[in-house]
Amino acid sequence: MEYIDNMIAHLSEFLLYLASHEQTETESLPALDKLSEDLDLNRAALREQLEVARALGLVAVKPRTGTRRLPYTFTPAIQQSLGYALARDRAYFEKYSDLRNHVESAYFDQAVCQLTDEDIQEMKDLIEQAWKKLRGNPVQIPHEEHRDLHLLMYRRLDNIFVTGLLEAYWEAYEAVGLNVFTDYSYLTNVWQYHTDIVEAIYNKDYKAGYNLLMEHTELISARPH
Image (cartoon, rainbow, N blue to C red; front, side):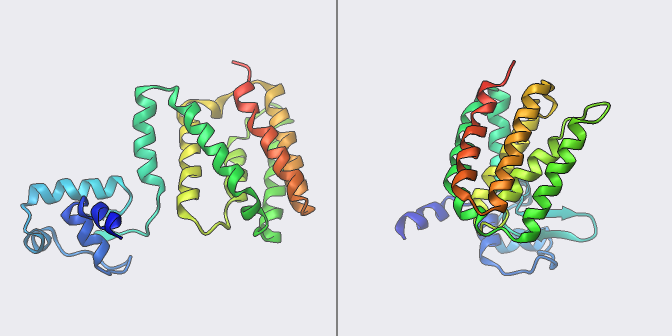
């Protein structure tokens, strides 16, 4: 408990206010002048703290509707930090990709056993759409289907930190240009794995699905350059 108190003590005045007040998501926060007075902050300092909250995805600021608190999500904070890391050195993507692989591995069984019949049908539809793109003329890269399929597998997890890590991965995937990767043999290999993973989940053969996922995660490191 003392450690948590120490963490909270490092929050800005505005973030502490935001965390401790119970405005609904449709209810605007007080105007800046009122907040400045309540928090004993000058407007410049308050605006800086508000901008940090916006970058973290904690508030939305819109003309006429004012400032509203948003539902908490972990994704924006990771996106900001990971984006900075990639701007410094693209090689950070490989390290984050390794983290993501371990997260998917650790939560696979817990995630897929909670999927509904509708979820599994949605995954099958994504598989079908992807193969249509790959077998079309001209060939199209099924990047949206790739992203949606992986995120859908973990949709039912009640853990916003896991889903935040996974969502940020796909933003980074696009940032480093893997969504435009064009080696046809590699892409068909990837989607055969996806097809087999979804079939295993459909058959509730989660061990086979897990093993296929683990083989599949090795593909990105072995992809042709």
